[in-house]
Length: 287
Image 1 (cartoon, rainbow, N blue to C red):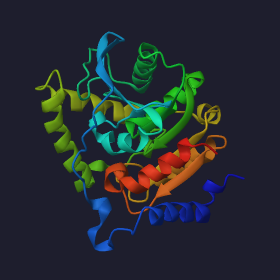
Image 2: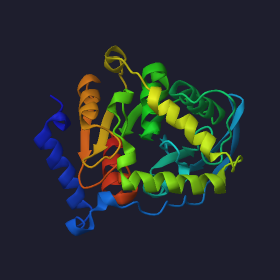
Image 3: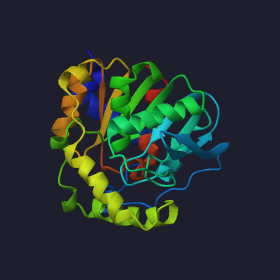
């Protein structure tokens, strides 16, 4: 029996990680209601723009060891992984990338879709001569990770999927969340600073929202077919993902672990990076 799936043990595990990382924040601070500043990335060993699928994907690499690719969420950029890169680079080769149309990467007229973004990841892996890698995804990045596990399992070693949904019905109305509203406003500013098309944020946002409304649609058979060692991870105060969809994915993917991080939200990796990183390092170290 998978111990992580058992609710009591799952809670104990999450609390143990929190305690190991130091005292929990005072409840009065409501960490899940804060959107901390976007981190910065450390100095990269290599970075650039890779020609992939008719566009240019920005990437950066850090450290040495088994490769781990970090995939950011929709509207964001690779800078959001700055605190995770610092935690991982002493042990792993860490690769970050800006998804097509996000951050420093360009886009073309092709509609945004998770299959297409997954093919961009494979393209970058080929460009960097990576046969296999662990995937760590947040939100849209986690959905891309699931897409890779379904369609390109031979390229994955492990999958840490944080705040994913398997179907549009698994998403909450984020317009009701002041934290998510603040994130969208910040994303507009960051897009203007980083994008090769800095004045086109509203068109970009409309395309991403169209994708969110219509994708993904992972069937139960597709989820049951995932063989990659996987953790389905979310936060107890996620303002974007319905808990029942998280539970469903973890129960359907064979052997998957389920981890619910306490007192954080869709932005857990910057709200409590010590807890998030401890869980991530534990997962990557293997069972």
